[in-house]
Length: 247
Image (cartoon, helix red, strand yellow):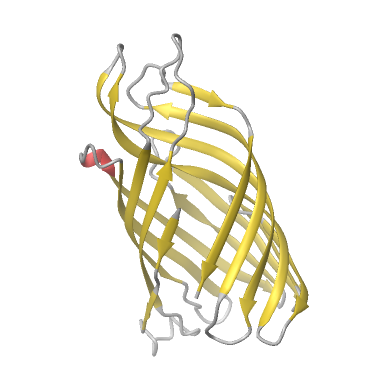
């Protein structure tokens, strides 16, 4: 469960380094995870808290430089914990720095980095292309978040799209362990890979209600405890349902 609100602020609107002109997007947010399992056994102490929380503020800026170059820049700082503990590991700093190059009128190349600030995986490369052959199609052939979307119908106020997407999911939090082997504060990661089939509706005007519904397959699921045991715990694959609304 997550909720956010985004504010768009004028930012270098009269600068030649911002031809769009792209605003500075500031997004405070709150997230809640409810953990049900994995099952604790005599040989495996899962020892997860029943819930963890995210409190963060995100900034993003996507300027266009003359005439072919652009950027997708973002920085997020937040607290990720179950509130039973609050230590320096509860703070996370995440970001992205991606450069774009207009290869053709319909294709844009992208390359950069995504900083996750997790305990097991800190940094991922970001590379690929975005291809928009026509107004009804968009293909993000892009690691680590590929997506292929097709507009299949329209109503008076909304366009309806179908898509297939992939992502590297999960996060990192801190909690207090209470196992016979270890009793103390520990950061942990939950990591997975997700492939989803979804539909979304977007407003034709600058404002309006938008939303999406996804069903997906989640695999390569793993818990990683910085302070074990157990340090690694593999989880079975599962099905994901995701619903989002925005205005």
